[in-house]
Length: 245
Ligand SMILES: C[S@@+](CC[C@H](N)C(=O)[O-])C[C@H]1O[C@@H](n2cnc3c(N)ncnc32)[C@H](O)[C@@H]1O
Ligand SMILES: Nc1nc2[nH]cc(C(=O)O)c2c(=O)[nH]1
Ligand code: SF4
Ligand SMILES: [Mg+2]
Image (cartoon, rainbow, N blue to C red; front, side):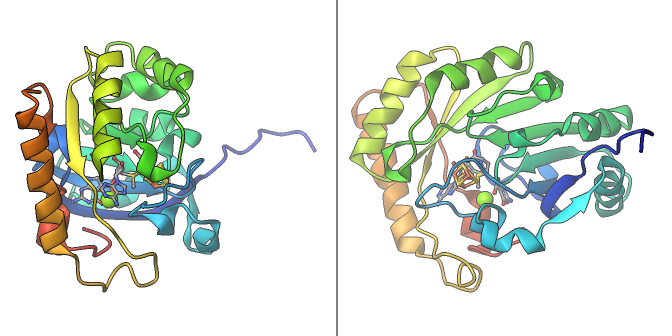
């Protein structure tokens, strides 16, 4: 056969926006989301199972970086902004070419990943958001791999965002913070999402989210732990569990 082998396409669950970043270090920032399909984890409370569970893989579109880029440019009207890569775990695919394409047009990129797979292109991000998973997720963090992610980001600003559902998660977050004192830390109260296909239309448990947020604030401040920034998922407060916002 011979010839030039085709670049493996990206598996994309959805591209949407512009919206605002609803979480963590870049909260409130206008952004377009590119959500990758596929994940090496399966957190018990994942709010994006449509991009994780292989039952949904038929809804994931194989796209070249150029095709993804064309949609981002259309959605943003060609005005440079921050592109948010999420998933699933975007780090199990090669987003390097897409990032290079976007950066050449003046856009910048942040990425959400759990820190289980490291890539050289992390250093091209304007912020790398690492979200190691606490006990309530049912997953176990491989800290050597996580450290590799931090190392591969090189000069790129890197932060840690930990979802907290309960006391166990809170104590786990404190230990994680002690391991990585130089990473700015964001604590995010967990949101109990029903699994798809109900996830979208289900009314959110606003009282539950708010009381967990208040509990997390009280607990953190009560311990005189003043280094984390404590934020809810702003997009959930505005739009509930709707997809594409
Ligand atoms: C859906 S994940 C995708 C990116 C990557 N797999 C990760 O977990 O970081 C995006 C962010 O949502 C957070 N998240 C997922 N489910 C959540 C839930 N039920 N409540 C609060 N945050 C959640 C994750 O911890 C992560 O920070
Ligand atoms: N507006 C908005 N902000 C977000 N921040 C992280 C999200 C994610 O699912 O990764 C997300 C999302 O889905 N929507
Ligand atoms: S790592 Fe992220 S996308 Fe994967 S299952 Fe957990 S929360 Fe969902
Ligand atoms: Mg989300």
